[in-house]
Image (cartoon, rainbow, N blue to C red; front, side, top):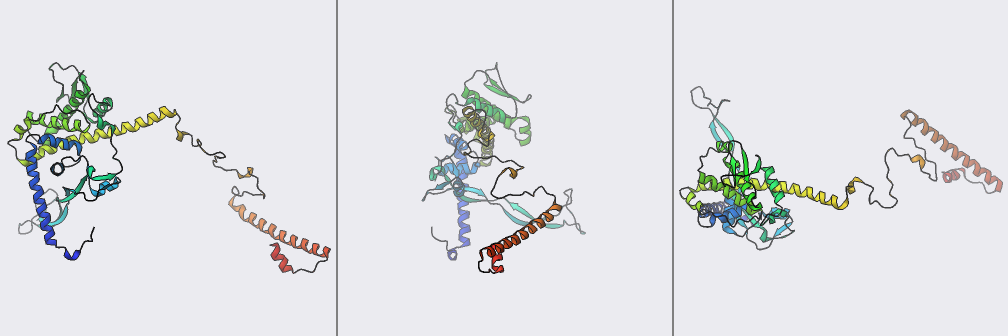
Length: 411
């Protein structure tokens, strides 16, 4: 990659280029939102929600328009952190990333109660405050198909099909993340399930197939999350029955698609009629409601499944190795000759060539006296050795030796 030449950089031209790209992206988004609610566009969008549940509606639509076969997207750095690398020559998918900035703003000064403070002439007192402005900028992301490197870790539950292999674990996880009780019963009306607004509980028709049971549980959980009395009061929206069913069915489709449960029987033909008289902001708000609800459910279920997988691994290990785990016996597998030492250590039992006196247990007051005794003993030893050398010299009538030299040798 060639070095950036600062001398040729034109800030004005760069700003105009960014503005032009933002205008182009905005136009694509508006058209994309409208197209979603026609023909099979809505189903295609929900498929993207299932594959990329953590992306915003804007970015899901932008990715879908640029790379319809995308399944998992990350920034260049994000893939690098996963030890995967974007292949040379791959073109980035342009999306929007938050880019907030701060600015100074003059406004009326208010008292603690929120009323404007007036000066002596009765005019509002002004003050300058710093505010944060939410803004976005175009950035690049890359699909996993554009990268290479370490394999991507996945949950085994992403392969659930047919009668739902792993049904018990998935259904238990759903019951754990839904904040109201889920029970089975015989429903006389013929409905597959319902969310009881007054009793705040979910009922599911007993005896259905595993796939239908999961779909019904998620459908009613979506109603509980979006259409309970508390949820409706918090949002302040007045939703028709058609809109409520559209939202619930859309959430079910996204979650089931994410976990590989058969969704071929879903049809969204009624969506075009429901959305015909709505403007882009309202349609986008509906899509965001569906996305957020499905994403929240998927993230929480995934966390429960991962926790269960961890417990299952430990149980399988215990089944294979018995009740006693290796870390319960630290000496297991140690080499021959391994000695376990625990404090306090008694070195008195060890024999060496020279006698070792342990003074660690002596009181501090006795240590100087001991050191003096050792010093005196050392001096006496040297004198005795010199005397012995002198006696030996006289006995053998050897030439007289230099006492200083003898002392050096003795030392």
